[in-house]
Every structure is written in structure tokens, then in C-alpha cells.
Length: 215
Length: 215
DNA sequence: TAGATTGTTAATCGATTAACAATC
DNA sequence: TAGATTGTTAATCGATTAACAATC
Image (cartoon, rainbow over all chains, first blue to last red; front, side):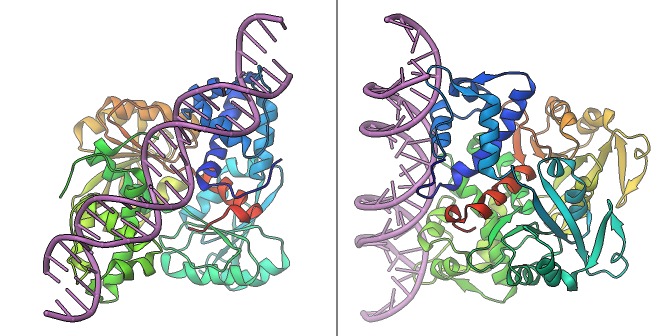
């Protein structure tokens, strides 16, 4: 696998889509696929698909195309789905529970090891057989238990201080659902799910469909 | 307000961010702001901010900058936050409930008028004082009650058929949380919240921080 | 071998940044 | 008026698309 210069975010964001589509194609029992075929299914151009894949290596074969299973496996490795990832969720509201209970994540190697809340009536209970711990113990928990990701599903006001604690204790990735832009030290990766922004874009496009180019 | 040629998605996606930051700035009691100041707060370049805003009109004043309240109001109008929007949610799992109960949406003019599910044990109940209806009646409901947005928070397998019904009955916007790319006729706007893709990007960046450039 | 399709380089397109004249 | 800062045009940068030689 090539690993030279930085790969743009545009490319990275397409990898999970390729991965998902290849899963569908695999399920249909298709063994090989050309960039042309894949283009018709995904809506990306064949040229872009070949460019994207070649950032990571030559997974195809001239005159043949790509082996579906092999390519999907390679993409899984590139994304990091070949390894298990541990996650804790801070905030046990509906969003936290939605993530916690979503089978799809667990199926692709994510393991939720603990939930955190500050509400005493929730601390000590179990959700989906995962213990709810006091958020005060978050830093210590991270120190003692290998944790890849902290998901923040608390109200806005609590998010930054949780992110601070997580970063202080060596967390490398934060998945933030609070409608705020967190400040984090170098070396900590932040991925936002800003539902308010998503909804705002939707209503903009509804009223200005001239600007909408599809997804 | 100018309304000539199509405005790129990159610009549209920044509008809610500007709007959100301006709210914060307003809350701090700041009356006027220059593109330079706004750049320092938001992380976008001053040049980009001026370019973006000028797609919609000249909201500033040379030598002065922008009036915070007025600019925020203008952005609200551009996005569409000056009007009420009605939404129904299909799927009353945790994700559906999370959206339903999130105060932030209601505060910015979104009104959830009904929930839908296919589970008979849920139909007829109320969540947050909103009635849960049989998903079989979705099309008829849309016909009879003005509905701007259908949010889909069902399992993957149900999503496309719900989208079909919604589109058939004249829905203009779909907010999709199911991990699938929906097919929709022209004129229907689709906004996806693909949590799996978001999580995949996060783990990629954790393991390849050289490619991460921040948010 | 001939045909197909990749990997990769070159051309194009679009978005961001820089510069500066206009003007408050 | 002088200083500040916008609105807008031009330059740059980066991403997408096209083209084609390499090769299975």
C-alpha cells in the first residue's frame, strides 16, 4: 500500500461509500467489477474511482477490473475495519442510546465498553447490558481501559469540558454530536455530526432547488 | 438579495456555521464585526467569508464591517429559518425520539407534527405529546397535512419504500438516517446523515493522522 | 493474439485565496 | 479627510475529468 503524501478529505469521505456499495455488490454474488460498472452503481465517475483507489495501491488488473471481495477487504483495511475499536459514549439520552444500540456498528468491529452520565439516577443502571458510569470517572476510565473513541452526546454546555478531559487522558478520536465546535489539541481527531447544520442545509435546498445537485 | 447562478454546496454548508457563530457573538453582546474578526472566530478566511456572503448580497459596510444582528437575521432568511417548517418522523426508535425531543430544532422553527411506526404496540401512543400513527397512513397524512420534511429513522430495509411513498405524495425534502442511498425523483431534496460513514472517516483519521487537517 | 480495462499523466474545471479599487 | 473594511476581480491552488500507454 502506498503511503506517501497526504490524501484529501474528499477521497477519504468516499471510501466508506465504496465499502458500502461493494458490500451490496458482494451480496448480489458479483465476483468482478470494472470501474465503469462501479461508476454506474455509485454515481462517481470511473475515472474518479480509479484515481481514488490508486491513492492506496493498485487493486485492479488490466483487462479484468477489480475482484469485488478482495477490493472490499482492502478498503476495509484502509479504513481500519480490520481491527476492533473501543468506544465509550458520554450522555445516555436518546442519541447516546441510539448509537449504543445500533447493531451496524457492532457488526463492523466497534465495541462500546461503557456509558457515562452525570445524572445519579442513571449511574449504576445498565443500557443494553453496558454499565452507566459517573462522568466524573471518565478520565480515570480512559487511563485504565483502552479506549479509541469518545462519543459525546451530551447537551452543548457539557461538550467542551468532556472533550478536554478525554484529550487530557490520551484519547485519539472524538465523535461529537453536540452543536458546538470543540477545541482540541493537535493529534486528537474530531468528527462532528452536526444535525442542526444538516437540517439547515436541507431546508435551504428545499427552497432553492436550483442549487441542489443531488447526493 | 442576488439570486443569479447556482451556489455551490461548499458555500451552502458554511451558512449554518456562520449563523451559529453569529448567534454566539450576538450573545456576547457584540454589535459589529469585520470579516477579519469573524475569520479569527470561525477559522474560515476573511476573504472566503466576504465571498460567501456576497453570493447573497452586500450585507456589510465599507470601513465598518457587518452588523451582527442584521447579518444573522439575513442568514436566517437565506437558510429559511424565518419560516416555520413542519416535519414528520418515520421510525420511533431512539434516533427518531432523539430528533423529536431535541429542543434546538423546535426553537429554530421546526415543528414535528406526527410520528409514524409500523409496530402496533407503538401506534396510538404519544411521544413527547406527539401522536404515533400507523406508517400505512403516511401518504394520506402528507396529502392532508402540510408537511415540509419526512425524517426517516427506520431500519435500512424500510427506508426506500418510505421515501417512495413520501415522494409520491409530494414531499419536497427527505432527511435520511438509514445507511442507504435513496433513489428519489427530480425535485425532491435528500439530505443524508450517514453515521456509519462518519464513524469510518473518524477511525481512518485516527490511524492516519497525517491526512487529518482539522475541522 | 485481440480486447478490455487499469494505472497514471495531462487538461480542465471549480473553489479558495490574494489583491485592490470603491466607499463608508 | 484619513482609516478601515467591504465588494469584487484576478491569481492560485486543488480536485475532477479526460486521455492513453501499459498490460493482463
